[in-house]
Length: 182
Image (cartoon, rainbow, N blue to C red; front, side, top):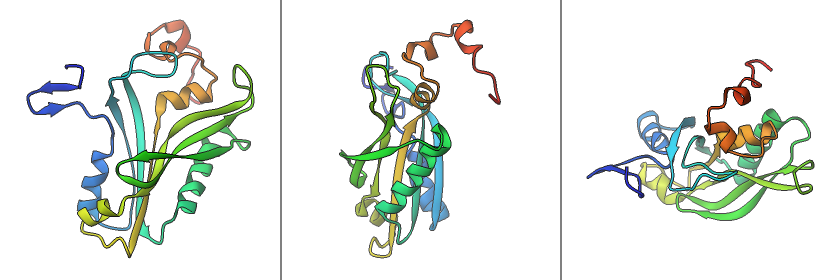
């Protein structure tokens, strides 16, 4: 693969799992609620919080009358399910081409190294009306929301791991501390 992710003259490694969502929307119709997990590839350098290859889970909901409040409610429930009853999340305005409005999803960590603060967890937004039109849906009738989180980032946050390197280096002593069901 080259620096842009091309593996051949007309093939590129996926940078998002959202390609599954488009196919599901066209084949299954509405209402649609889908999660798309998978491995993705980016040009990111490996550092304490990034890796060029990671696992992502994106979700898409398309139905009548969905709103940003519905998206925030789902994200709040997901944060509590993943990080406990005291989990707090916020949406920070951002830009993604297929959602409008778009936001970054942050989580509050009171015990973060360097003092309490917000940490980015993923991206989200309301499905752009042009995406709905492209799928043959009337955006005056149907709305949708989408979000995506990195699974390795979730693991870092959930288990207070400070460095992404620990997840990808394959040190048996590190991985043995994570036992299924605990």
